[in-house]
Length: 349
Image (cartoon, rainbow, N blue to C red; front, side):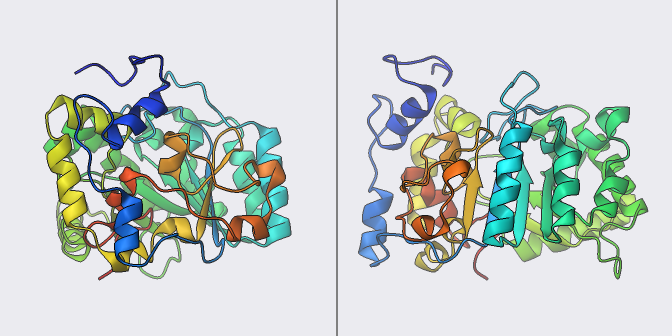
């Protein structure tokens, strides 16, 4: 199987991925469209409720190259949000009274204006979430003070940790990642993150390591808390389970391993209409590193901007965006399978 980076038939990488998802590539089969699945349950078109969260991707640069990464992030990526675009975001947040800002990447901390942006957001007295891969905290002395920086800016830290054991974590994210993650979690605990009564939220994110759905979120959270406390005296608040969507590196893994069709069938057979009514694209707008607007971070990776005239942060129009139809494709089955999946974990009990 050729790499997704190899342009087939002069298609862009995002177009080629969409061709696979829609069963138009020779090595794939077609499945019922997600749009038709929603129609079966009278849920189409999928409409937004309100814009409560602005998820801002500060760039694709990362100190890691994780096998499941839907952003295809890594040290060699050059896409970084400019301060000019950040300024536009700040103006939109202020004028539209958006209450929660979710900063992601890559490793968002690697954006040179990251601290400036977080400090400006703190002055606006809103909820700030930062999605950290943990290892960034210990990878370079320049980042060692991040726990204290997060604390002083009242940031909620959401951290990736594939498992509570070294073998599974390093298999998914690279040699040495687990030990570095434990060190980073310990540093966060030392300043109060994840401790009862501190008010400093530390949440972990679990992604399956293979072509299967995550286990029950509450059961996994109990296991993680038990083992991390017993083995490393680490505490945290909540565990979020997120289903791996069939795009980017994970799509390549599915194709290379011959698991693509089976995985898509699992997602489709596990479709949950209740989860479909609660997907994150209904209350979230994703801002790409270049300011382009998307229904979610996953659509961003497939180059599927919002279906509205307001396609860039400079033209942000809350009324137009609330009236739009959400852009759908086959990868959306991942967010509606089983208990559902969002950046905040499972959607239904």
